Length: 274
Image (tube, rainbow, N blue to C red; front, top):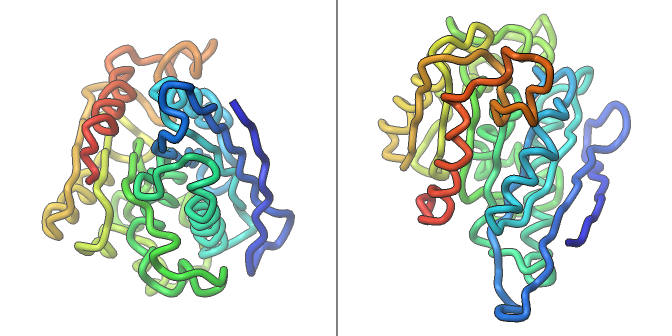
């Protein structure tokens, strides 16, 4: 396996560059030119930090599926929208530009986001064809288009069921209503959005399940393909919902939710986003 670290500098960053850590599987002798899907893991953290429990452990699971994987440590507060979106868009563009050399299927670039990271991944999915995502990084819309989204207990709406802390970190506490509506992503779904795999828990007390339900309704109205799983129990920030990512915090270990990663594997292997 080859490891690479790429720093991403974009317009508007207030401190430091974002970091893209790539894990590239080695070619195998039986299929030396095989192109694999690439999954970009986008951790949560309320746009205040990047949660390490939702980074490398998740990337390793995608590697075990036969995908390439990478982790994006994007800029958080005091950086504001659309800095992180530009960073993710640049990451997608760089991977697509290097697809042949890295044996990546350039039509199988998937984003796996958690919580606020899922909001960022969804932002890339709904804004990829708008200038805010690509103009300032010197790319074209097609360069930054994700092919599919895997959204885990996502922050979606800035409305009644919104996670206030995420939007305050993303926009500032004095954000105008118009800007809040812009990043309330159930409002931004169009038929140009990529297919979505989506899961949440009924008992999530931080980011209510209504976030996923509102998104599913918007995807349905725009006739965007999606797969939705609602689990009956489990709190927020579960990651893999296992001892591997929960450690000594028992509330982060939820057996009924552990199936999501296997379901994603089927979604990927069946090319459900195609």
